[in-house]
Length: 612
Image (cartoon, rainbow, N blue to C red; front, side, top):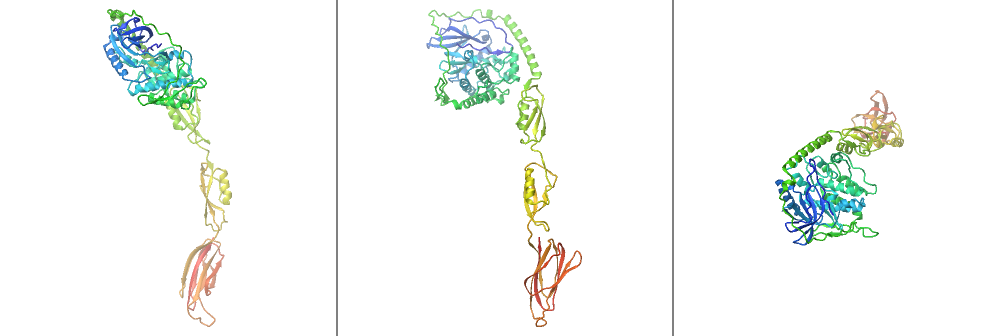
């Protein structure tokens, strides 16, 4: 049997008891056989449709609701809207009417039990709980596609047929409560144990509101208890708005626990967008076990195609208690007399007293809600270690906490959280500052002096300090081959580990061409600078005419002077021949070679080479 869950309305008060209509046939068609549940808006009966000869469920609205014309109009609009939603996971509306006994609507009768009754036997296995939640989310997704939000998702509104099919009931009831002309501005709609934070604040509902409701129901199926308990509606609302739920049992699969955690996020935008996204996440969470067959008492799930082309998983068979024996139809069913003294049920004086009391209660709840809003809430400090600075800042900001940052050297990546105070799990007030220590990266390295060292030794020393060496060879007169002549950065500079130090290393000496010149009878004077320890002049010289004497030739001569000191370094004649070489060991300085022509005509050419 399915007791209809009562909706919670801040400002509501005790209503007069509605009469038991068992035995009545509404409008001569719908027999009310047995009372099976009662909620805030009406009583639910097991019934029988005489015209179609089928069992149905009939909800008769309590008479005082029907005294509000606006509410009646909204009731009819909601019934039409809900009747347009066709889904096997939603209890279907067959008819709606107005009899002398009151407004009523007729739905399919689901033989089985409610989730409330199932939970009385304890928590569900994780796989079974995930199946129920997935079917529930899939049904709500179809409603969301038709722009209908349930707003009162709870175990009492979740029915499980004997075949294991999950069905959602009591759609639109919360919307009807909100649409009543008796409802005060800011009315809180929902059931306290299952309402989303935005409902507790009196804010508009959205598909994310139903996502939260499914999350609470799934949590209760897994843990055997609701995520929040309290002695009053106000206390429950406070916990939904400000406190995180306690951890699920350790045997709950991590993937399923992650789905629950996201569905129970405080801000709607942080949850799944709607129940379609939630159903997809639940399907992903059980993906590895979706093909489990009936072996060892386990359940079977098979994929099938619905009539609308949507692929779904057939529901598993849930443990359902033995069916109750159906009530026999009484041959003496009578048609009840119309309500002729309805105002005696709820006379004007009583309504005024109820309205006054409702105003007082609503005012009191508003004051309590204001106190809750103004009082600093307590939150648990999250675990920040290992997060980046940006992620830690966002997480603290989301929990209304502040952050102060400092840093220290560490082998961890830069801007990674190393420590925090207060520590993870400590409960603090809103606005509390959390001191966060970030990694500044590895400590810098002082660059050593490697000038004068052999290149290989310098590279080894830098490597031990976690620095890299970039070696380039350069000419370096007077410096031994392979010796470091220059480094960059300079010694004493601070570098990050694995930074590069550029080393200039003396290359092996060789001859470098400096200048060349030539002439004939006219002399030439050419200055040049020598850098190496020794240098040479290479020349070619040949006579063009006859010598003065047969065996004596008077040709050009060369004079070498040090321009820095003015001293003559050497004087010599240019002998006839090719690639004649004069080598000098005078060392670095600025020199000049002056060529003096001889008395005989001659042609010569010379070039100077420095060795370093």
